[in-house]
Structures are given as structure tokens and as C-alpha cells.
Amino acid sequence: MPRLTRSESQARTRAELLDTARELFLSEGYARTSLERVAEEAGYSKGAVYSNFRTKSALCLEVLSHIHETKFGEASELLQAAGTLEQRLARLEGWAERTLGDVGWTMLEFEFAIVAREDPQLQRELVSSLGLVRGMVAAQLQGLADDLGVRLPLPAEDAATLVLSAGLGLGIQRAIDPSLSARLISDAIRTLLRSTTT
Image (cartoon, rainbow, N blue to C red; front, side, top):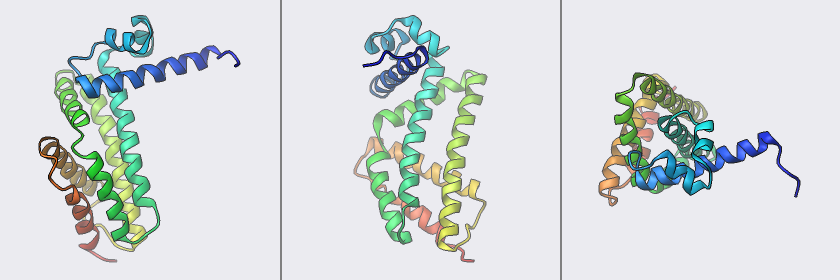
């Protein structure tokens, strides 16, 4: 097996630290996860953590960004796949049933938002990260509307905010009561797409 280059080794270390941090943040929460614990669980020194992430909040922000990219990437693929509106929404509803209300993710999002409110720089970084998510959802909604030959009744960015707000609220409720149906997300998108035609 060939020896890793320095940059390959650094990339692997960073990836392993991120994976470990994700597991700990999702299972233990933000406050109860220390950088020392991340280092220990990943099998690295605390210095390795600090050489990759300047603070615990920077590490958590990157973990959340990866979660957003993964989760919303999955939803995007389901909406982009060929099929009728109802077929696409059925796939999205299945994703929402599996995803919305994930207790670890839901609680981490809220715990980190509270932390970010106390740090203006961190809050700006979180706003920027969430703006990327909103942009991704807006692009998906606009693309879906274009593909189906309909016009969104409001700007795509506003439609994305509406859908994300519904998803966030439903996620909180489903974290408490998993029996609630996630179909409201697909219903919201269906309503947006059927409210106006071109």
C-alpha cells in the first residue's frame, strides 16, 4: 500500500475528525461535546483538532454544513429524477418521513442556533450557511416548476423560505411526536406548484 502524501494524510485526518465530531454532536449535543473528546474518539491529539478547526463552533458549523449538503442533496436528487409531480412528491415524502424529526439533527440545529446568537461572527457564518441551503431549495423549486411548466406564485427564494420553515416546524414536532406525518411538506410543494400555471 503506497504511503500517503502529507496533503492526503491531512485530508484523511480532517475527514476522520469531521466524522467523529458529527457522531458526537448528533448523539451528545453541542454543549456536551468537547474538542478533547472528538480528538480522543477519533484517535488524534487535541493539537490535530486545533490544526484543522480553529474553534468548536467552527467544527460544528462545518459538520452542519456537511449534513445540510447531504440531506438536501438527497432531496434534490429525488425531485430531479424523472416522473410526474405526484411520483416526485411521493419520493420526497418518503425522504421527509425518514429525515424530518431526526432528534439528534433537530436538537443540534437549535442548540447551535442559540450559541450563534451570542457570537455575531458565528451568527453571520450560520446565516451564510443557511442561505446556501435556501438557495439550493429555491433552485430546486424553480427547476421543478420549469420542468412541469408551471409558475411559482411567489419568488423562488420566498417559496424556499416557506418550505424550509414548514420543514423546520414539522421537524421539531416530529422529534417530539414521530407519529405526525411528513406529507405536509409534499402538500406544501404541491400547493405552490399548482396555484398558478403558465
